[in-house]
Length: 146
Length: 146
DNA sequence: CAGGATCCTGTTTGATACTG
DNA sequence: CAGTATCAAACAGGATCCTG
Image (cartoon, rainbow over all chains, first blue to last red):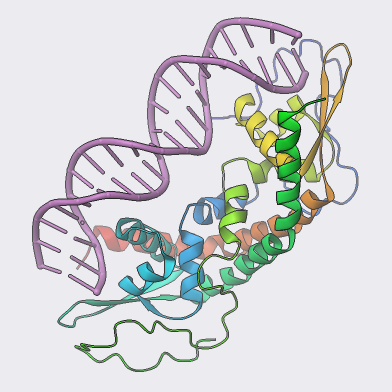
């Protein structure tokens, strides 16, 4: 799918079809993707990052995790933790005790993500006020236009 | 970190219900949330980050953006760009020309996000191989158990 | 060109109930 | 305790048609 542009037609656009802007040195480029889609598919869901944050603090058992994340259902926790395990971000250790005991822990790969997450958290804390202000302003402007 | 979990782990440990973990100095904590949920709600969707990346390269008109992001519908572009505007991450400038012309540009707040996004992209590029490897291994292990 | 309004879809998530 | 299985709700996203 996608198969590039179907740049046929070119109705009223004479020349200069592409070449958008590219003023100076873009901090991040790649035309479009990169691997951003990738990370987002991995961290963009509702729980993955929260689970990672909790595991960043140390080993957790299943129930522990569920209590810690607060709000997550055991179904979602299972799915989330399974995907993280599949991606090599966490390890799952089963202790064959009488009441089953399973421990989850971040791999070094998972820990490397922690720094990114911290970046996100920091940014959020730093700019939340401005965002909320902008949002209030926008909402107000939506009510009483001129 | 990795300050060695307290070797409690009594095999059939009856008591010790709560008392989670909190071993050493976590890189990121806050017990659970912080503002991570916040950022994720803003960047976790399918298009926001891609649009931001495009706008990081400079001013774009609506159609330009749609062509650049490739795959996005004008509905989604509208919604995405509106939300970004509401949050004060982009500005929307309407030029009352004959064919309407609207330009979108990152605010400084939006630009500050760019660094974060770059972090995500870098991480993805750096670790994608390991993740894919882990994934293949997991999938293989799922087919032939013993 | 820019975008609003609808309709319709697959995916994500949550609530239970059941098992080893 | 640590899951699995099912079902139904919620939602995000896409396609299309229609304005100014």
